[in-house]
Length: 408
Image (tube, rainbow, N blue to C red):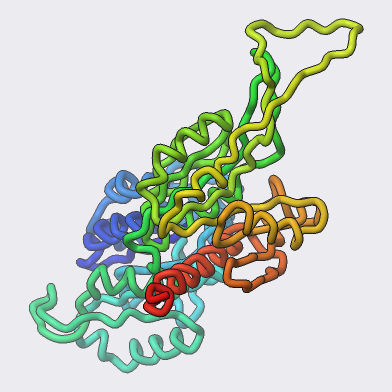
């Protein structure tokens, strides 16, 4: 998830550097936009080094001789890919511009172009904060849904005492989480997740695999990390980037995935098996490429080990989630798998449905829980599906560890 951090021209601009680090600890990708005034207090290089992202300082790049169409519409591109706009510190000047719709630099133009949630953390002199114009601007922004992180009271850089000091970084991060409806309900948990396909070699140039892209498993891994979990991701071959804060273990075959899962299962409190593991592999893998000829070729296959069933036999108090990619009788097959694999939750879908299944950015699933609760979900992004899966995981863990359950 991407946050655009606007840094404006005030003494508190230096505190935004630490804010970048704290946001990254929550697995956010942070891109910084600096006003001209901010650059008087801290350099763009500092934020580039901390964030690993390009720091935007101008609406147009004409000053460096790089003006082009891309730079002219960059504020639109940034607006479209950001999940939240955070301005900290926010000066009285930028609050006034936001309130009145003035767009005379990159940050103010971005504000008008973005439909993402907005959080601002003002910092200024106490008299400026209390001025009727500033109060009016604050109320206008609140009325539009902008979340205001009120400044703290105390000794100010100008030598005065009162309200105007930038709120603590912890308060600002909490406001970001709240604006994004962020949950930290998996803190203290270790979540083991499998994702992607496996590849079973026939010869040095051919192998058996499936159409899994790994997108669903990676979405669950990213969501679990953001909700505070330690995440171990056992991944088959995929081109996807590792989500921030996630430990990835790369595997290729079903056997390698089985071994990696077995080695890490004891550390987990929750295990989510989203990988599309090959059910069969060639009995023999040829050392040299099989040459083409006119005769039929028969390749004998043998079953791979069932990773989910194997580890779930000794799951103890762990919560187990399996996936079922079906082409027919989805509910019937999902309930059978729920029982046969000793799982607590099965995420099932019809991979032939439009907008569902392999290599899509969306999915249409039904959650089948061990306690009999079935939840059909409408078509939604895989990131949203991941959150709904984890919501159900949290609910089932509460049931599993309830005093009533423990007493039985």
